[in-house]
Length: 206
Image (cartoon, rainbow, N blue to C red; front, top):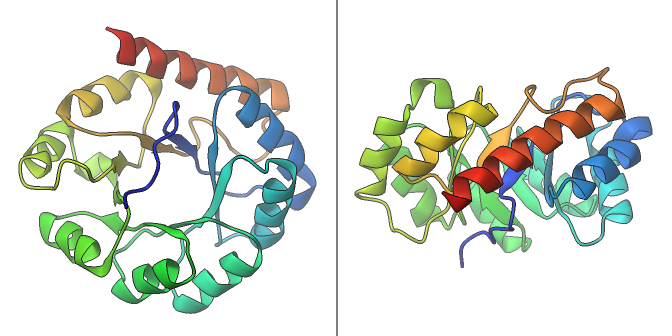
């Protein structure tokens, strides 16, 4: 079973989110249509943020990024997370995620890594870093990957860059500092979220 694709398959990468901000930022993003949220583990308070987002947004899919070990997977599961996103392809992390009933979205940079991830049971693939994986490469991957596998380019994604990747076969995106960065006001986050959502819907209707 592949990772479910919501109407707006854009995943905010909330690197540096604090527990005090989590509820407010989560509500702003959810109101803009973002129903998948990622909190990277390599910042303090990430697990607490995940627990807060799960509690305040019960219909959202909330998960962790920068998940590098089986121990990380177990901690995310205990916090209530549902999605495991990694920068690399680690079969042990993928298998642990599946064993605990979590969605697995590992990072891959080559077809070999992509198929290694799929053989381990990954539900989708994170093409990372997208700066070194242009749309032409995504198109070449699509020629050999199973068509039902969701593919999410991640890295320097902006509203203007999404169209070429979608044309090449991407299904969604992970979005970092172009959407959220520590210190941004809720109004600024709402504005950026609206721009991304509008760009996505415009691209899906042409």
